[in-house]
Amino acid sequence: MKAVFPSALATIALLLAAPTVAQEAAPSDAPAANAPSEAKLALAQQIVDDSFPEDMREEMFFATVDQMTAQMREATLKGMGVDDQGAIAVMDAWLAEYIAESKVTLRTYIPKLMDGLAKSYAVMFTQEELTDIAAFVATPSGQRFMTLSSAVLAEPNFASANQEYMNEVQSGLPAAMQDLQGRLIEYMTDKKAAETDSET
Image (tube, rainbow, N blue to C red; front, side, top):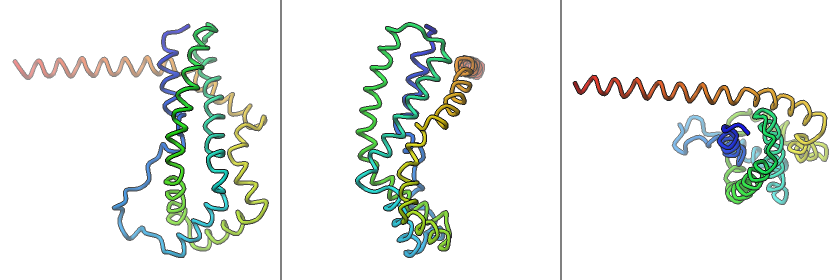
């Protein structure tokens, strides 16, 4: 097993644990000029409520995390050339525990994420666009489309194509990590040398 595997998997787990929380909401003191009207906010909230039914939100978020984790795990194992089943079992157990703990945190953030999503919709879309979107997601077809938006990640046609993409990207991870390590070592060496020169 290549030594880079544990650190690579740990890094990936950190990125996967709550992918939907990766982007922070805009600061609360954002310019007032960007504040959407109450009408737009109401429409945006309606879209969120219809797109992410409250009793299904957790399931939708967790399904996305699980599918992305499974595909990234597969790509990582393939890219690292790992074949030690004992080591894989240890890593899988650790990953499962980490993701489970992360879901506890994600669960507490879902209300805030939904609020941020509604506000983002209100800022990004016009009143007319919000009206059109709200009309669509209010229909049975629209609600089903949104409900299955995370499930499509696991649908074989998409999952297969996405897995191939992930496998190829992950195959370059060891070299990329080695390159980063080399750059950091070079930077720290140069910095130390510069500090030493300035003291003399």
